Every structure is written in C-alpha cells, then in structure tokens.
Length: 246
Image (cartoon, rainbow, N blue to C red; front, side):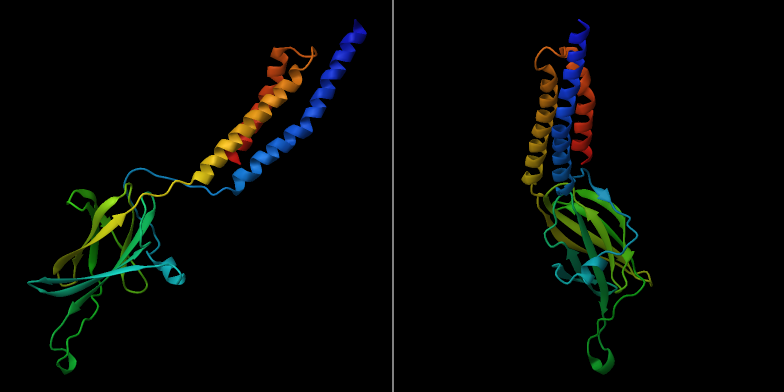
C-alpha cells in the first residue's frame, strides 16, 4: 500500500514536470503575437480638445502628410476678410483626431502704389464650433491655439461619420467680427480584421493550452478531477494574464 502511494505521487510529479515545458512554450507563443500586434482604439462621443501643442506643427515637419486647404472670402459692413483653412488628415475618420488651422487676413484697397493688399490680421480672438451639415450643433465654444507660423487652430475628434461644418468666429483687435465655415466629410474608420482574427486565434490557443494541461493530469487514475482542476487554476490565471497583458 505504501509502495503504491509512493508510485502514485511519483507519477503525478513526472506528469507535472513533463507538462511544464509545453505550457511554457504555449504561454510564450501567446505573449509574442499580442505584443507585436497593432492596437486600435475607438472612443465614443464628441470630444473637445485642449491640447497644449499647436495644431499642424507635426504635419509641417513631415512633408509627406497631405494637407487640405480651402479659402473663404467674407465681406461685412466693416471690411473684407479672407480666411484660409488647413486641415489634416484630408479624409478624417470617426474616432480619430482632426487638426484645423486658419490664417486671417484683410483686403485693403488703395495700398502702396494703389494696389490691393491683404495683410495678415494679428492678435485676433478665434473661437471654433462644429455643426452638422443641416445646422445641428455638435460642439460649441472650442478654444483655439496659436501656432508659430501665425495661424490659429483647433483639434477635434468626430464620433460618427457624416457631413459636418466647422465654423470659425473671429474678433479683430479693434472689435470687428466675422465668421467663416468650411464643410468636413467624415468617413467610418475601417475595421482591423487582422487584429480581431489574431485575438480569436490567441483565445483558442489559450483555451487549448489550459485544456491540455488539465487533461494531462486526468490521464490514468493518478489524479482525481478535483485535483486536476486545482492544479489547472494557476495555469489558467497565468495564461489569461499573458493573453490580456501581452
């Protein structure tokens, strides 16, 4: 009887030792693909941004980034103004941040030599707001930030795809006000199918590793189902930690 108990414990230890290398390799296999897989985040809800950096600064350092430009001529009873917009990316997607920057100038007739001049307006206060194409307010009173090139801009994240307008309300240092709006088309962000297929594949691998470890204890009569489950719980926790944290 004593000899049989010793043999049973010895058999259990041998099985545990044999299972460790295979389990270790499975956990390493789980961690490597997750850590190298691109991560995609999606945030819901419209957001007002208050970043301390100026919009389009990074885009100016990277010439390969395409920038959308547009102009509006605004005529009021107090003057003729021109608003020039720069936007990146050119095809904004839902859930991703879009950078807008505007340059303000005023048309002045009868300048030097009688030619028309368009000096830049310095020190103007600019507030941005976003509406849908039919005028429904999406975001209001968005503070803008000055850029080193003299423009002023704002960053905004659209929650949903669709047709929008971004409107800039400007007040010059001498108190004159005007506004200019620009249409913005937002598309739906594509689904990263490779990421989700990888998650499903890793989940199957993790489940297989846990089941295989449990089944290795259940072979023969050396261990009961309760003992095998108790031995498998730490392994399952470790596999799930590797899967979730990568």
